Amino acid sequence: MPMQVGRSGKNLFKEWEGLKTHVYLDSGGQPTIGIGHLLTRSERTSGKIMIQGQAVNYQNGLTEQQCWDLLDQDLDVAEKVVNEKVKVPLNQNQFDALVSFVFNVGTSAFSSSTLLKLLNQGQYDQVPTQLRRWVRDSGKIVQGLVNRREKEIVLWNTPA
Figure 1 (cartoon, rainbow, N blue to C red):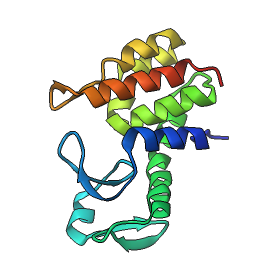
Figure 2: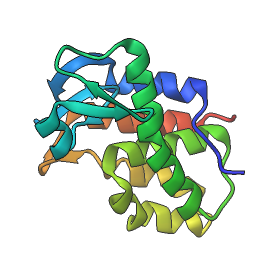
Figure 3: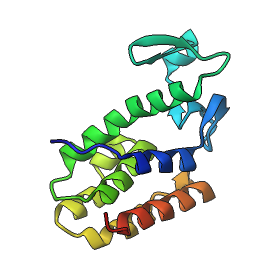
Figure 4: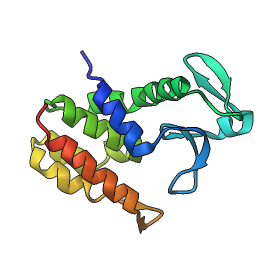
């Protein structure tokens, strides 16, 4: 059965991404809402987000529950990629750390990463070093990404 991010993992997402009920610009200047939900072009154009099959107008903000539901939806993609691409066993904390990473960098970046290649060779000890390479946005080191990677590394290294 595929793994999913646990409640403690979701709380870490809230800590790292923040929970904002109104649109804000992320560190790369992209419009974002909820718990790190990057608004798509169609969402920006329509003013609506599909949450659990319902078109929700976000102009006046989302409820906290809608933010959590949106995170669950967004995590589905990252969870699926980690479950499909990682060929070695993971504990819950390792899984949650990788889902956080994929959620942040994107599925294609993860799928073609050296991190994934080394992990699938069983080189678990190389994951922290590889995570530390992913701290730039638009070519510049971003302290928020440095902090996030270090928290992901702590989670990765915490026995489940």
